Amino acid sequence: MSSRIFVAGLLPLFLFFAQPAAAQEELPLSKGQTVYLPVYSHLIHGNYDRKGKPDKVLLSALISIRGTDPKRPFRVASARYYNTEGKPLREFVTRPVTVPPMGTLELFVERHDESGGSGANFVIVWDADAAINAPLIEAVHANIEGARSVVFTTQGRPIRAE
Image (cartoon, rainbow, N blue to C red):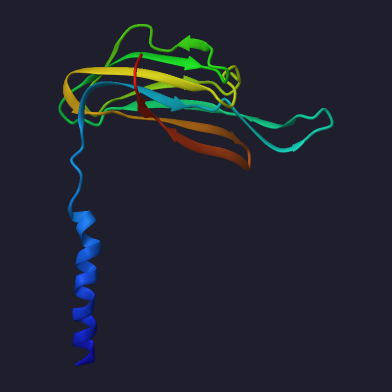
């Protein structure tokens, strides 16, 4: 009899916690966005040396702009790279590039290019003819040398355009 009371007592608790999973938010569709993506051309770490500078690890960055709509393409109109001080360094998309449904546009910043600094970023502008699932925009940062590896990702977030 006590086990029935225990199970019956858990049922309201289970239903309370199960509701958020069952009531999923509807994902918003979009016809375009401006997206901010943090990118690191290097990381500083460790201790200061005799000259007062910390150790530095250079990183490459693979920028991945992934279509998440199974039926409709989108266009990447711009992918501007900025340094830590906010100075524009380079436009990676010189003319609009159409990305097919479920396709990916990849951009790459080489490891030896430390012009962006630890506060580098991309501002990526995309649009579509119809409202679609917004692309997933990420950067994969890496420095893989022998037994030591540094690999991590950052994700973009929509910002208001000027």
